Length: 569
Image 1 (tube, helix red, strand yellow):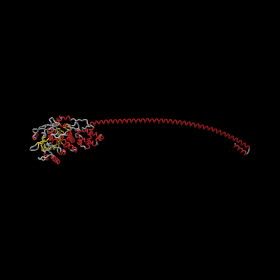
Image 2: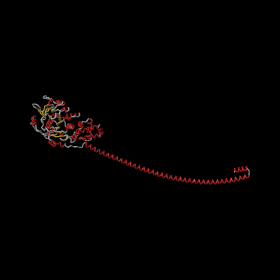
Image 3: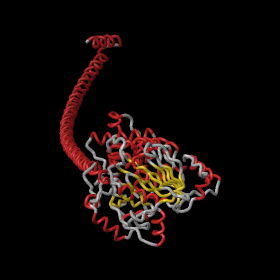
Image 4: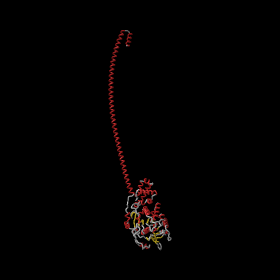
């Protein structure tokens, strides 16, 4: 309960119980609520949330089981509650009442949706959540820079994937400007998006993005708004849950101004199942959480981790948690016994009891507490019975939740998602334009190719026609030449025939002439021969007559003389 700038946490377990008070001026020094399941951690968290709200401090609470929603309804009276009211001495001040509650849900089922843009989330935090290597983180930073330089808003995961695909398609161009961009790194980042989508990152990233100032609202009566995150489903998706918590802290740290020391915090967070925030996280991510927790208190923000054992929280972070509420721990194994000893060592010793034994003997609704006093000095550990909440301990009804959501201004602002024009739409449109241009260019090239082929075909046909014409012309020429040759040969043959005929006729005439001449010759020769024979006959006759005359006239000598004379003649 809220009392004069402090939270009345409960009473000590003594014969003369003393009030255990938590000075709100030290609430921004952070805290831890630890204990085994069923020991009362949720009740403690509700008591503190109610008190901060009564003090006008807005609160954020993670509801992992659904029972924190009871803050929206007044508590129910019963005999047990009456006994607690008397035990804590609050008969005159206690009243059952509901608190101003705004329900939120990353999935938008049990509350108003919580969204942020990928750009607002930033590459550094996104790299840690995705478990990227240093080189891959560098490529992711380049992707964000490319988006900024080209007016591409990265609002959701499809925008991020679109930008990565765009860079992959133009890797050589961007590598020349921003440094080497390995395809393997882009592929690794793209694959790392899938688990985020599977766990609901596609619902967390988008618009309208949450304005963190909407968590700083107060009700009309001045009480701080209790923002309840319905985490029943999201707690099953640890990566998304951690991503949301880290973004929330980073957003607060970035937006809130320095507050300095104040009588109460500006805002208080209760992170239930806090061990999920530190499970299997890279060292760089752990350092980021440690730095945020360490520095955010100067902004007037108090962070309270709720988990089973202090050993769930890394030592560098645990060292920042000055306000402690330790519910019972059970130690059945050596590891659990070690966890109890560790938890006991974090408290300032109370000489009235042994802290380690007390932790294991605490009952439900009891806790060991230690808070900073007004001067910031840790108080000795107290065996404390935690005071009862004023709101309903059980989950609120569906009707109450529906009424809260319907009456909230946040519904009109955040319930309906908005898909503004961003990288995905721009790059998709550009891709469509490029595809159309490429299609037009392809069609033009095809048309040019077809025209070239047509021209080639026409040229081929023209050449073929010319070749055929030339061939026909050549055939005709050859035919003409053959005809001319044939005619020439015929003429030559005719001329030869005529020549031969003429020659033959000439030869015939010559032969005939020769025959005639021969006949004439023979006739002349015959005639000559006849003349010769006639002469010879006449001569012989004369010679015979002479001889006869010589014989008759003389002797043998005379005959010879006469013959010689005749020969001389």
